[in-house]
Length: 265
Image (cartoon, rainbow, N blue to C red; front, side, top):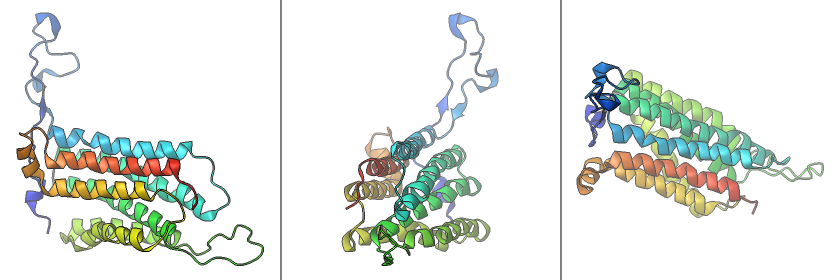
């Protein structure tokens, strides 16, 4: 079951309107705020809410990088990676920033669903991208296939099933309060990606950027676990969970940079 203590974050401070008058001592509240919000929290859990902007920037930077790339060649794998898989990853990242903002505005199990749904899609998309780039497919030796491209790449074959499993894992948790399937979906790709780094050679450059992105996410998970401790260590300036959002947002920025510099090896 999802422990309710999960929703109790270290930094619960909100952004408040402390102004009592609009300028010039008129005694009226600012025009953009109704009078009943003066002195009240306008943005609850301010640090955890606002830090999601870094995740948003990460997703948008990736979409911009894809727009800057030249049109893919007749290589089917290249077309799938740049035209389907990576766009799905970056769009899901943008959706994560929105869902996470919604969740942290009012942390409950029902709002957490909208954080976890796009997160599973992002996990699956980047994992399938790496499967496609690292695991060789069977090569078509037909002489008519002048490009010699792979005809049975694993990434395109498993993307849709994995996305469905990821979404179902969140829905299953929602209706049964059983986190085991979601834990497998969210943790297993993180464990398998380093194995791909060590055991296989990718078809494109960008290994360093992928490693940096994965390192950012591992660091983000550590900060999530040390939420209260980091809040204490920093003199209540920033919590571990807010720092998690910053680091998690830097991971897709690294992948976006990979898109811009990647070449066939």
